[in-house]
Length: 171
Image (cartoon, rainbow, N blue to C red; front, side, top):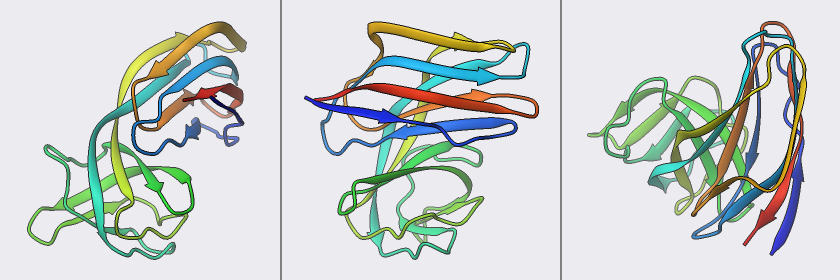
């Protein structure tokens, strides 16, 4: 088992943390701390539901990914891009898909370059914890777990929110 600890980005209306996993890795979140200014804010745990494989290299400063869209891919889907060679994973939001050209276009530029064999995962909400306008912590042997693939944790806010720490194990 490999331990992990990540902090989320400081956000205004959303903060997120991505826990990368390759292949059949299982992720178990054991601790999370989050702060939001929104009365009804929620921590949302997302796990990979569908996957597409990158077919052509994509530069870090572009929005288009050379990958055949996964079944049912649509605008505003939340995805995690995973670079197998680098072990890096990033959150993205789909702007458009083209099954004929075999491309997925994101709303923002890629933060890392992708190579053939890397993956694009559709992330589906699997659970939530209410936070509210406060700091909330959850600590248990298992707060959230995934069977395989990356995990994405998101927190919403109105002007300031942050996932302070998410920690656990990858096996």
